[in-house]
Image (spheres, rainbow, N blue to C red):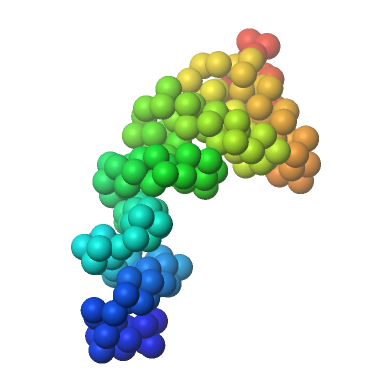
Length: 175
């Protein structure tokens, strides 16, 4: 972080300053220093980045805003990012989490379903979809995806509990 900060202070107009700011922003995300990460991403977007750098800056900004819990603004930048990288399971997952957290269950199901379509062998994606389906009342769908999650991640206690809950609800039990 210190070296990157020194570089962008001394050479703010070099083409490499865009990459340096992106690396700096990514470091701030890892350190959970959200305001600094947001600042770096926003600076990148004002520096005439290449199309690839712009897309990566949207992702960086979205991740930092998500970490700061600025969910609506994070969603805006995830959408921009996903227009260019529609098969990014991690970004689709973040979008699904935002929708679930803001009680937009149909949208959460759609985002998690897309993540499963992209990578059907991802146990976390299967579990996320099962949870969203269960929350939205689709018990049969929840059972199917919870079973997949358990099959893909046999040691995942959360997936096993989710499957038990979905099966009980499907059979008329209570939460």
